[in-house]
Length: 297
Image 1 (cartoon, rainbow, N blue to C red):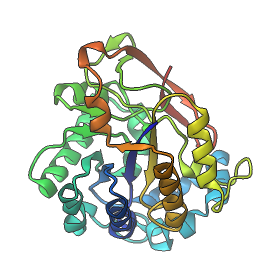
Image 2 (image 1 turned 90 degrees about the vertical axis):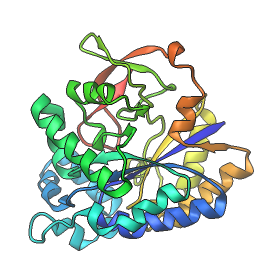
Image 3 (image 1 turned 135 degrees about the vertical axis):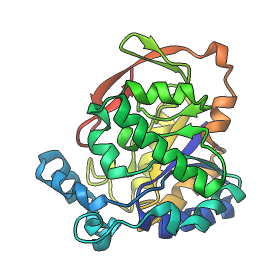
Image 4 (image 1 turned 30 degrees about the vertical axis):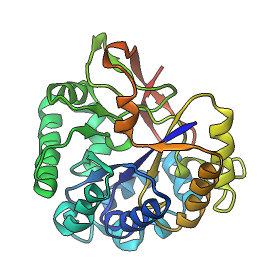
């Protein structure tokens, strides 16, 4: 079995603290991963109003949001100015490429994108996308070649921008299977999509008896019982924070079983571009997560 590790880094705290911890862990185990970075201001606090929604409130109760993200993070953009992550954490970010990891664009303003991208048109989407590209260029002196939409929230303009920029791949959706060309409203886009196949840690904690102690066994069993290779999305704020030891146990368990780890770029490179299937994207709900996500069927 192959497992591609996709690391979403959403906040200043996750970039400053969680990302270096994951770098050290991956270095110790000889694993390369794909990191997708938030590079603009951390406005996590602006999402606190989502707590009024029942589904999000249930997630807050299950996953100890305050413990995982910290009080300051929950005030950024509301009572405290949001730190500009790309500027404040330049050296931590550059170290990823030196270690041989994939680096791609997650988003410029995570809060803004996750709450609005699905419903916005091309001008808004292009503006936010280009701000992220410029921030990426400021850190790595080159443009990104991969994108993973924050919260799996996209619109048709996102797919068109990825295609126009000639990105090697994008990872904007959930669902089974390997790389494919997405179709949206009848239009086929020629930037390969790589879906996240497994649930995320925050989706399973507190559900069906899964807790901080047994989640490694849960993910090992789930991956083993589900045919095919897998993409696991983790978050620097969680697996790079209070769940780091459990995540290390999961990685070591998989290594003992002979699991091969790869980056998303490695995964895409194993498939011939002219043989990728075309599959439609739809909006669907995911157990343990509020709202609808872009999902492949």
